[in-house]
Length: 314
Image (tube, rainbow, N blue to C red; front, side, top):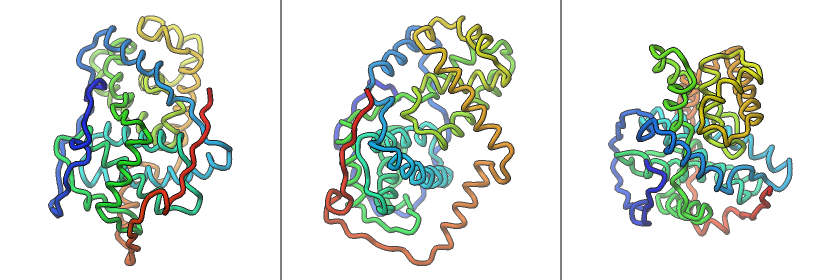
């Protein structure tokens, strides 16, 4: 999806049909229109102009609480992705909506249902932006809750207004093939390296708030790690120095992101049952064992889930 594309309310808030049929969508990763330096520079330029990156919650307690809630949302989103066949860009975009929303508003602690509802709304909106065929709202099965369609739609509208209708986000996937072609010397392994980098980006998205690092930084860090997991600060700078479009990025930030990503991969490899697909299967099995669901009626998001605006780090 081109970041310049705009959508009207009817396109996003489409009518929902109570169709029980499941939608199968072919998985694919969105790619740049061409391996053109100017195009990549334009994407990086848009990131630079964004005010989202670096947003934080008011206090550390809020951030810690959000981290726990985010992990539950991440697990749910990845499990639904497997069921509905969404592409990975849809998943990542939904997490950026979730993180951007929470950087601007705080959902009161103890409102787990509101966090679940927000996750559904973010994934539904991301699917409307990215997928060719959109599943109906009843397909978004929440763990332990049953939300009416009107409730989800009103949360969608709250997300849209909070994010100021800026829904065409840039994700790391837009950069991967370009960076692999520029950074890695082994042309015959490009597809394998891209696949590895995709996996690293997804691992990163599960653990790290997407507002903490710009998509281009995450992308180049993932590609560098896919090519070589033993880079020093100086060798990393040499590798990225040949890519003119990266000159505007903070090399120190890239190196820190590279090391953080490396730590996450090592942790995953040394954690039993850490395979993402195993986690998804375990999560889905646990969800299916829940016998009682609480159905919430909607009397207004602002009444049921008090939201407070938060400060932005300048």
